[in-house]
Length: 479
Image (cartoon, rainbow, N blue to C red; front, side):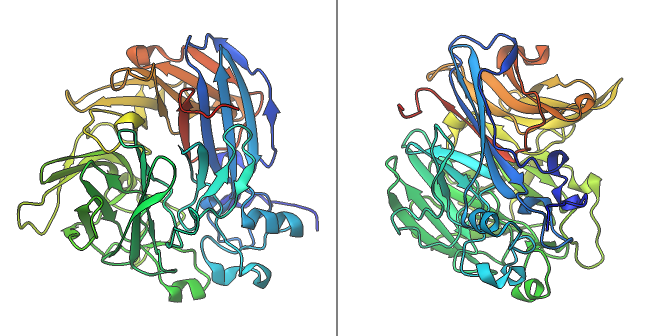
């Protein structure tokens, strides 16, 4: 049967399936790429090689499609490749989708039950000379940083990774060279097990600890400081019973509390403490730090489930106002006997999602964060790139033209030893008045409000991303 996507809503992420692998040499540039701005921006997102097997699927179930902008000496080249996961290879060979609804192996074609269902479609992270393409239900897939070709479609750190899963948001501590990561449902689907690890700068696992979550839930991101690790348990819940009924993996349970868990970094996990909180939803960490026994974690937080395509239990429904995320600081003092965590909405007028920071300060005290946001002006609602200074609680922003939308922004330092937040913010932009055609913009943090100093133009709508990663030239291995 010929391929036909039938306008299924599940494939509509970013304008629909892209499906093309592209090499575009010497992209058109408006403005001038800054002198010394040399490196590679990597991005990945869900893209459907074949239509969903079932019509009740969600956008996050597309195959991983990675792309890169290689920027050097004022020029930029674009490349995109599908991530050759075990799932991709099986679908490609069969010329059809063999895997069922989102993260539900009970709905797969029996021919692929023994294969990994991981899509590697959520994040790309650079460590030890490798690009790790990530999806939190499976081990990493390793991509060549220069070609995006798949090198290893089930990477387990020399069989040292005992967890069956691996987060989409590992933290790379530049001070030590370590990558700290975890897996939830680490012992199998719907288990409460969380496995936490560290790998040294050569990629060797040096630490492992196992803990139990209060209940099985989505743990998309976590926080790491110099001395602590923290998890926020939110009530996206699952069960084997739900999956055997053909449901997608997650549903929002508004009757379940949140729990904020804190443990020592490099400990055995036995010291973990869980602090109770109200119904909240936060899936991404902007930054985190410790001050003695006090632990602070900044996240984009809403008061209810933030994904409209996952079911809501107990008669609840998705509410866009409750789903709106605001930068919120969670904190606990481990020297006290408190049973709950504290929350402070830091910027109540600036709602958004997908926060990031200057990656050189991950795991350490920081003051600068960035985030895409929405704002109103005389032209109506418009997309913005925002920069937050926590030391002053002041913000600045670049507001996009009406109809355009920005994807997750990423920080690029001006030079290796530049002060925190001194450099550029880079991001993909979809041009709403040009059928979603894609541009890559470079914003100077000193003059954010002035807009891009350079715009790298693509003559097509690129596949949409979830997350991206900037690797400056001083980190990339020599070809």
